[in-house]
Each structure stands twice: as C-alpha cells, then as structure tokens.
Image (cartoon, rainbow, N blue to C red; front, side, top):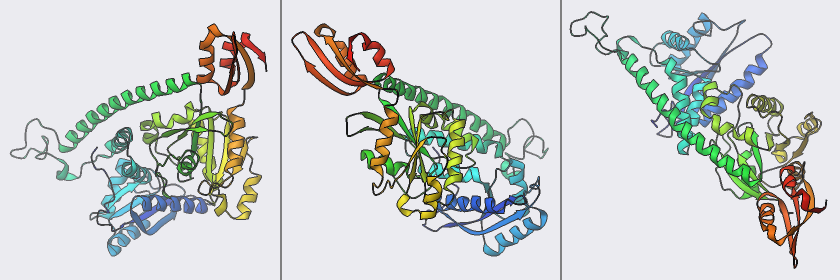
Length: 435
C-alpha cells in the first residue's frame, strides 16, 4: 500500500493544525466534546492543535461551512501562525474542500474528521488484510474528492484548450488518476473478498468446534486489548491511543472449572465512524455479529462514558448484533471518581449484568469471569451419560463440543459427565441417565 499519511512528522516534529466546527444553538457543549475527541485523534496521528475556530450557525454555509467573516478570520490565523492544515469536525464535500482551500489561499490543506480517522488507520494497520482494508477505505473516500486545480491537474492542458501541441484526444491527469483509482478499488475488493472467504472458513471451523465465541467490543481506547492481554497473556499491542488495535486477535481462555471459550479483540468504535470505513472493515467488524456473547467494555474514568457507551450500542445495532447476550464491563474503575461510579452503578443496562474492573491491575476480574461463565453456560445443562463401548465416537463428540468432560471406563460401557448445549444434548439424549 502506498504511504497515504496526511501528517508528516518524520522529523519527530508535531504537525500543527487548526480545528474547526459549526454548531447549532444549545449545542455548544456537545461541539466542544466532539472537538476534544478530534484533538485526541490529531494527537494520535502525530499532530498538534494550534487553535480552534468555531461558529454558531443555524446551518453550515453550503460552500465554506463557516460564514464569510469566520473564513476570513481563519485565513488570517493560518497566515499569521504559519499553519498548513485545517481540520473540520464534519464531513466535507469535494466542492467544499476546494472552496475552503481557495478562500484560505497559499498551501493550506483542508481535511475533515473522516480523512483524519483514515490516516490513523493507515498509521496503525499491521496485517496484510488491515492494510488492504485501510487503502480501500481511503480510495473510496478520497476518489470523489479528486478535484482539478487549474493546469496542475491537466496533461498538456487537455483537448479542449485548443493550444498548440495540446489538441487532439487525450486524458487530463485528473481523468487518469480517477481511472487508476477505480481499477485499484476493484483489485482491492477482489483481494478482500478472497480474505473474507478465508475468514468465513475459519468461522465455520469454530462453529463446528462448539466452543462459545466471546467478542470484546467497545469504544476506541476503552481497554479491550488490555483486558484480552490480562485474561490470556495475548501480548498484543495495548496503548493509550485511539485505534491502537485494528486487527482482530482471537485467543482461547479456560475458566477455573474447565470451560473453554474463544475471546476476540475487535476494532474500536467511534462517533461519526466513516461509512466507507465500515464498508471496508466489514469482515473485521462482523466479528461482533458472529460472537455468541459480547463483552461491552467502557472506560468508566472518561466523563463521556455514557455517551460513548450509547455510540457503541448504536453501532452494534447497525452491525446486526444488538440482541446478543452481553455483559457490560466498566473498565479503569481504579481511576474513576466515586461520583461517576455511583452514577454508573445505577445506569440502566436493560436488565443486563455489569461489572467494574481494572484490566491493568486485575481488580474485579473474578467478578467478570464469574458473570461471564453464567452467560456462556446459559442454555446449557450438566448431564451424565452411559455409552456402549461400541459408541466411542460419542465420547469424542463430548470432548470436542462439550465442557468440563469427566470420563469413567467400565467393562462394557463408558460413563461421562459433561456440560452440553441443546445441539449436543439432542445427539446424546438417549444415553442420558442423569441431568
């Protein structure tokens, strides 16, 4: 994949940018919170916020988002402070990017929140699939934003210019860029389709194993990877940064009483998650849909915890995983203030269980595993079976698809005790002697 990073901090010097937002009446607090998150995104990308420019308007200006006076103020600020980038906390159309850059003049680059998120994904993607997904999302998002800037985007001025040496058939550089982009998008989609098929094969194998799949989901930087590391010693990257993890990681975990599950760490959610990112990362995000149980992790030390939890729940609904059995995990409880903890203790989770933990220190993990085990075993039953020695395949079935199997061999039979789900129970029902 080509190096598509927007922010160049190769010399360890933070790239400075101005953050911009428009908000309606009564939305000042929400806009401020969103800009705080945008600044965190910028910091993760290796940049630094030099200033914020905001404006309360009934609706954004169709051409430049900000009104004429604010655009002039922004232009002067860029010139005086020598700022080369402006980031808007909203999605910009191709024409808006062009018009704003024309107003700002010089070499000021204008991007939006989605472009910044895509840049972070490009920075953190490590697996081959992750890199392909990021590149596809970038191309899908930026291809409509390939806009010509005078002669700089043309090949010999194009056939319409009529100048000597430029007449006749020919493509402008912009047309060539768009054609190449379409071809690259098609190639990436084909590669990802093959990887998606391979992922489905792996999921089918997990289905046949009968092991419960638990997806760790939640807002970005909530501590999902830290939790997986603590439970399974997975040793995956866990940093205090947004979108530190982009590639899914699955590890086995055994409860103290013997039941095994598969734990999967997933890519974090965020408010205003770009549509093209959801589309490109569909096979990865679908891990939530294919999970049997969800651990919904939230950072309880974050003042915006409840709002971010709602974003997570909304995203799960969009992915078709809104009705999955779930356990709400309020992480970083050791860093939360008592008032927040008290507020969240009474937080309505629609009758679902919740627990307070510190994935870093292990505080509250016993409570988490106890409640998770109940969820995993929901719908299962403990049975004792007696199989003829000739039906040894059923013993193998229990060892591959049941939990906590105990076996005792007799002269003409095998007695097994195991925890089974309804599917396995149907296969061994006639041999059950006690449940």
